[in-house]
Image 1 (cartoon, rainbow, N blue to C red):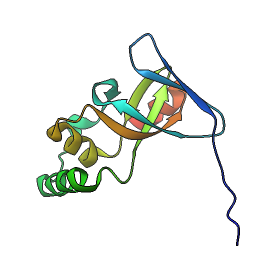
Image 2 (image 1 turned 60 degrees about the vertical axis):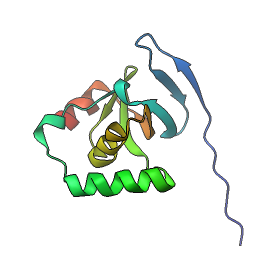
Image 3 (image 1 turned 180 degrees about the vertical axis):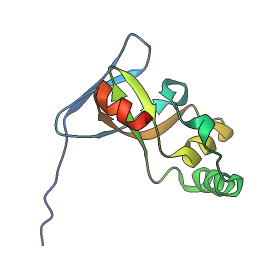
Length: 115
């Protein structure tokens, strides 16, 4: 049994807002992004379960983040709509970055997420 190996080509560079910018071919890429460069527009509308955040903090301290958070990049700006508990766990642990699965989107895609 042979499993095909799929790789994606991308480069990482600094953008004008100081955050890394991905140039990708063929879909999402996994990168570490600074927490302070990720905008969370729905953060105030949702409350995280404190017990789940605590459990994630313990897990992240022991084995690291296992599943990256999903990020939408629109014009070099990063938006997070999911992964709220993982994001808060990283914040509370004082970690400067978080592993993200970044996909590019348009302003129309962003508007759809904000509805």
